Image (cartoon, rainbow, N blue to C red):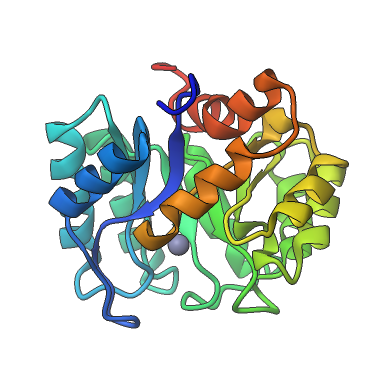
Length: 251
Ligand SMILES: [Zn+2]
């Protein structure tokens, strides 16, 4: 809670990242949440991990121990055998209670408009998981506009464009959300003026904020708190949208 606002970090990573060497522990995460007034965080695996099942188990243990403050998301390499992929997504949704499936096209080079990607999105829909799609670095497959076609093909599936195109493609993220009502935009990595640009096109009820890295927590939340916006719009970005997308039954 900050300035009377509930804060939902919709993009936090837990575990060990093989590509960057980052190590995010549960203790440090909870300490950072307390320090910055974050009420709830969605925990995502890093895109390159030693063992995706063990990473999902680690996230599940954290969520079980702090279910009021933490929720979990799944992420795994989309080119393993389809039966194995589907089985792990089912386990994450039904046994571990996860709330989302993440695609990171920079390290999981799945072309969102290829027929091969249908399997990914259909599996998320089958198990009732919204998809979080990393956008920005990793273009062309991480371009926000590439999610327009699957969002139209799967109108019941909710798509969260993480990092809103990462600054460079922020306008594209705004366009994608404008043409697809099931596309949501997560605003990390944008400068405040780019957040304002997105807000000119996309209602706050489809915007959310995440930290991605603990070092960025303060900057990401204060850039929203500092916007000249009605309180209700700020609360949508800071909490309501993420709670509605990921925690519909508990918000
Ligand atoms: Zn991330």
